[in-house]
Length: 396
Image 1 (cartoon, rainbow, N blue to C red):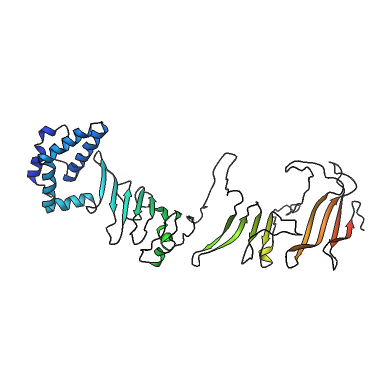
Image 2: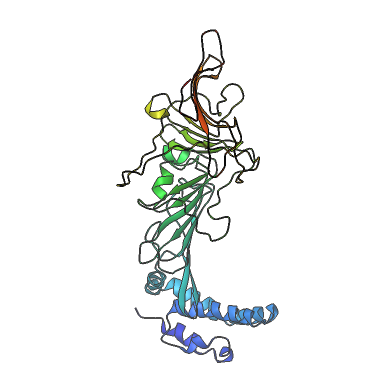
């Protein structure tokens, strides 16, 4: 490239502005670098608290003596210089490179594709559209953008490995594809390589997490007493389940209801609420299912110690305060295994295996217990004792 010699002469002759435009005397600088120097100097003057009037006076002087006007005019009229200017810029003239101290520190550009209203901001002067971002970046989409109207996308990465990490989206009624035109409600998607995930409308929840295989979606790392705290407002329901994007259907599998009860269910189960037995007992842990497998529990022990087993413990402490100890008393029920059926309007107990304290209160050396088997006769709803194994071992 051959730079216009008259232009260099005009810049080089600005002796009266040597304090403000020292780069004019540096023949090693390109036209773009000289323009950037002007911008840097104005910024430096502002940082030095030089008044606006002084700065405007300096700029006005450069305009009046033709320095800036000639510099830009010669650049536009010199095709070779203009091409070099574009090449050095690295993008079209709609791109803005942010320089400081002669180094490219960031880039602001737009997407020049027809029907796109997209502003791209990068923390480095070296970037690639959508993927391969070196460093942090952000895309802002206007209301008329045909793909992501009203969206904000954040990119991070290095060594050309950057990609979309978080997108605040609302869909686009102006989009060319069906996928972009649906789900116009606001939602946030966090993860890796999420542009395609968002574009195919798999991100239909308010918050979506798309994490790499083998990594947890959420981790809690704390050392306080609130470690791993996950909460919902009092009285609200917390649901965990599966989302089917093709049918926009959510299937709840685990829930904590507004009273703190846990419900586990699979398949097409009617009713989301915890069930009550005998019109008075609503268990805190309930398992629903429409098959034997889906309504069963398994406690498995894999120890190679023959005396180690999987156990189900039912305990009783009549203290009245959770976590405190008081000896059980004569006739205190230690626990029951109840078998319930449905009478058409709810569940009722039909049979019981019940354990209770017999003969005397429990101590550290004496725990007398009886075991009773109860069944319900016809034309009755109350289980009656059919067999008792007493603390002495006798059966009655």
